[in-house]
Image 1 (cartoon, rainbow, N blue to C red):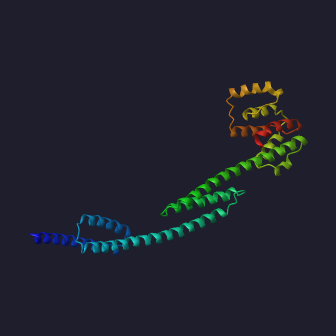
Image 2: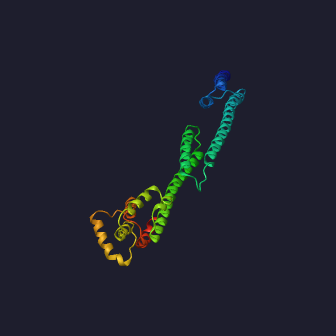
Amino acid sequence: MIQPIRDNIYSFHNTNADAKKLLINKAKAELDNDDVGAAIDNLKRLQQQWKDVGFAGPKHDNSLWKAFRKVNDKVFAKRASLQKQTKAETDAKFAQFSQTFDAMISKVNDDNAESSLLNATIAELEAFIDQLNDFTPTPKAIIGKAQSRISAYQQAIKDNKSKAKQAEFVDLFATLEDLAAENAVIDGANDRVNATWFKLLQEGAKKPTADRRHQTIELEIAGAISSPQQDKQLRMQIQVEMMSASMMQADAQNILSKLKHWVALAPFTKDDVEFIQRIKPLFVK
């Protein structure tokens, strides 16, 4: 009566042992799988199958489990080794990227870099970012630094343009002040102002003397600055005229156009000293 039961249990254990041995052999095959990621996935499926297999008996079950686990540990250790190697290679590549980035920006002195150099460096950085985006894993920190530097250089280019324009106006008004104070000829102005302003000065020098009061007030209105009390009535009149003619735009281009007309209106005399000082704050900050 007991023997048949023992035989059934023995058969059950043997069947489970054979199933587990088969799983061990399948696991060993993954040791030769060059695709470690796929090997890990396969092992996880085998582990689940192992759980579904019953007890293989007190004599064999523990040793079978140790054998199965040993194979699993080898594959997982192989993955850890590859991950370590990959990380080392990635770290080395990232360090190389950092050196390349540092070399690119080392050419630029942020305080007084010329716009041509800034534009060239921006182009280099943009190409560099494209290169970084093609690398896996993406070096986000270095890309962020490069993008931040590009933004800074773009702002520096704008600042350079603003400084150049301001220097242009400083030279112009210094020249106008000298011409008006001394009733001087404009020949010497060629070295002090750019070709555009010098041409306008030449145009004005060929014309008869004229009063710049009206055009000065137009500039004051366009630039939203006040006029002297004595010109209050005239300003109101001019303001109505400008509104009727849709000339009230206060944009920089409109004001610059009025300044050019103001410069080329007539030769500069001592009568213009006041008008120069009145509009100077619009352009020289």
